[in-house]
Length: 423
Image 1 (cartoon, helix red, strand yellow):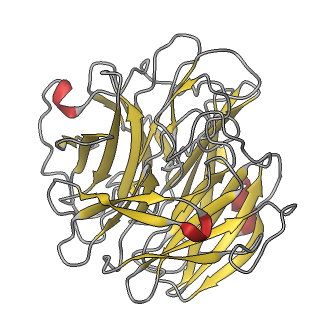
Image 2: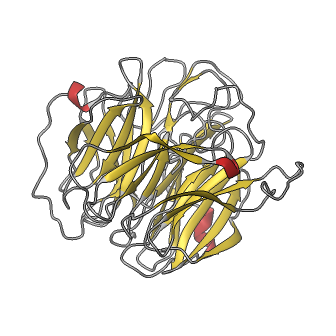
């Protein structure tokens, strides 16, 4: 999943601008223990209630052009159920609260936002993104800002198994069909389908943003000039298709097929960091996560260990994941395990052919086991204490979304359940 817009713009410039979503004014992220106590929500209709978690926190450039954020990243924030995006205000110095996209038990895709008082607002019939989604559709989101316009995209599968794109911006505040709809892209006809949209290109851009740090990178590192989105989706049980869209293009284009991977599991990606290397992760037919890298610098000269413009499998892998696991990446890579349905996080040292897992800094989220194959959404965001928090969202019951939070560096996990409107 790509990152989302969660940072604040400290100065006016030609790239990032704050994403404006018409809701209560946002603020820095409050940890669950800092919020007003909320009632646990049970008893919602379980039938047809499929919450897709995709978390994108636009880190000021996270998935989009210049404010790229995967909202999305996560970004967004991932064949997941709920998408969370942190929005921001530009000159005010106030940072973003979280915006969550989810599938209501009615089948509608809706959104709601965490207010400055710590309560989730919205999510009713006045916050509808789409009405034609299939039950248990994956959701993916991407957001960015450029030239004064903030734009966000939501991807889902409709009742006819076509992948749909809905787009909104701060200039219209109206959800409209995106260009992908014209391509008649058909996904696998299955209960669980892997799908992920991911921003590629500069994540933060200018150094004026306050955001969580990229792995092993500073804010002034060089970024590629080309920016846009990739979309991966399962076309059958063992094949993914890859599409691409460059910023400014009127249409999506086919790029390649990926054969021999579990089409019921999610897709992970990391393509918004500095440099020209991008990464994608698939689950193979043995329930092992494979990590691929690709150096897109076509002016460079490759060699036998570092080829240019070719997807190459790294030497790392994560074994024994749930066959329907979602995959997510923001600062840590997350997957659901097959033996206990717990969510594990892995610190990945990204270095093309030398990519490795930092075993000493990997962990299990200290919460309840997720539903088998739960949608998963993850991110990291600055908090009110001046530090950064890891955020993990998934389902432990069919009627709740659980939020788990921990300091970016270390510490205990805290949790809270997010209420979903019944009507």
